[in-house]
Length: 183
Image (cartoon, rainbow, N blue to C red; front, top):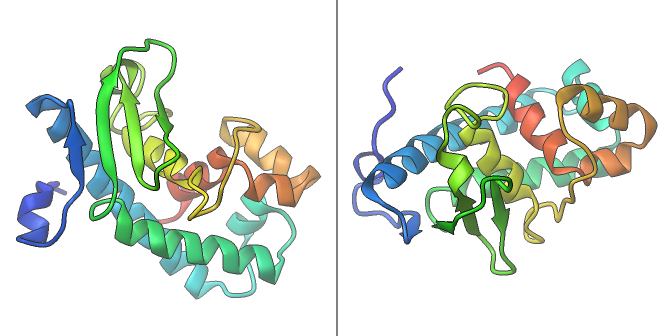
């Protein structure tokens, strides 16, 4: 599947903004935004098709709970709309350790140097550029106000078994759920 630039997909609609980003960085981010948006819609579709839970939901969010389900569905609906229309992506971070981080302003996401190192954060590997955008988006209070309690699918699934509330409050549970939803 060919990923099209946001400007082609959106025409004159409001689009994401880029601060201190080079043209190659913008191209990389645009591809990640398209994929993250597609995956957010896939999550919405999966949750909508499974209003009483699914094995995948249980794996990442623990025993089914209507309140947690509704919270996640609402957040992914908003995320799917906002990643390419409201969010601002800033490329001024020179860290080789931190991949990205959100600010206190909704949607303002800083992407660090390592985000663009495809040897570490690839388009499709374990640390994906698009799933990083999902991960960071969930940190915003307007979505899920998550924290970083653990990483990797194995840690996230264990967290879901032990503490479903904490699993829903963990950014990587949502990023990994989005990775595993059938697309």
